[in-house]
Image (tube, rainbow, N blue to C red):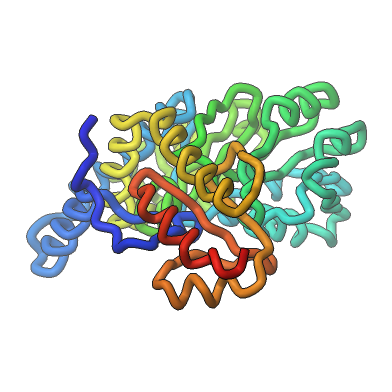
Length: 344
C-alpha cells in the first residue's frame, strides 16, 4: 500500500508515545463533522456510525468479537467496573513503573482491603503466584518502552486463576496483539492508533463481563439506544456494550478511519518500519537492539539538545524518550543523532 502523503509531520516528531499524528482520512473526516456541527447540517447519528466502525475495527485488530468490545473515554474509567467487581481483600499485581491509569483505579479500593503490589517488570512473571487475584500491567511500558512478555503473563495467570488486565495504549497500532487468554485489553486511541483524544476501546472476556456491574450505565448502554432516553425501564445490551460510556462523537469520527487505515497497512508492516527506525537510533547511541518502538535512555543534556534542534520528544521518569511510528523517517533518525552527537 502506498502511504506517501497520508501524513504531514513536521520533521523531528519523535513523540508518538505522547500523541499520534492523524492520517489524512481521519483529519478530513473530523473537519467535515466539525463543519456540519458548526451550522447544524445533520443530526448526531451519522457521527455515531463512526463509533460502530471503530468498535469493529478494534475487534479485528485484536482478534475479538465486536460484541465483546466496549467504548469509553479513558483507560482509568474503563477499568472502574473491573475494580469494583474485585472481592474485598483482593491482591492486584502490577509493574512498579505502571502508568497510573492502571494503578489508581485499584488503589482507591484500599478501604476494602484491596492491595496493589508493585514489582520491577523483570520480576513480574515470577511474582504471579497463589494469592494474586489480578494482574494489571501495560503491554508496553510508557516510561521505558519495555515490551511485556504477554504469553508468560497469561500462562502464569492461568496457572493460579488470576485475571489478566492489559493496558495496550502504548502497543496497539504497532505491536501485533491478540486477546487469547486475556480477560481485559483496553487502549486509548490517541497514541499509536493516531486518533483524537477521547476515544478509548476495550475488550472484556465473557467470563469477566459476568463478574462486572455496568456502574456507568446510561442511555448508550441500552439494548435499544433510541428507546432508552427517558424513564426507569432499563434493558441493557447483553454484551460488552452494556459497559459503554456515551461516546465523544468527534473523537470517534477521527478514530474510525485511523483504525481502518492501520488495518489496511497492516500492523506487521508498521511493526517492521518502527523497529527498523528505533533500532537505527539505538545503534547510533551505542545501545543494543530492542523489540520496542520506544527508546528510553539516560543522556544528560539530551532534552536541551533536542529542543535546540527542533526535535520533539519527551522526558519520562528522568530519561529521554523517543518514539517512532509509521510516519517517522530515516531523516528523523539522522537528525536526532546529529543533535545528540556532541553528547556521546
